[in-house]
Image (spheres, rainbow, N blue to C red):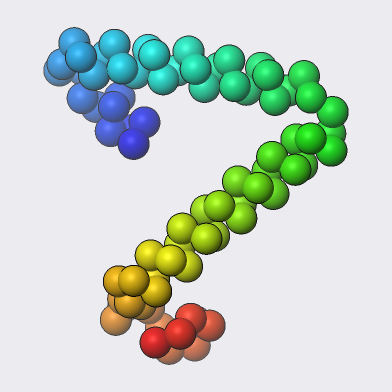
Length: 77
């Protein structure tokens, strides 16, 4: 999504403002996480990975596994 904003920001002022807003908040989040102890950063990383995995599993369950995925990939059909 951020890459798309970069492209849109070259043409539209609203996209440029949104991109600057996003970059500012990502930088603030990055700075905040960097100040935390290692165990907190690992916990945040694990929670993020679990969330992304959960979204992937739910999406594949609802929409089905695409036909272009090889049969040996361990996903339900």
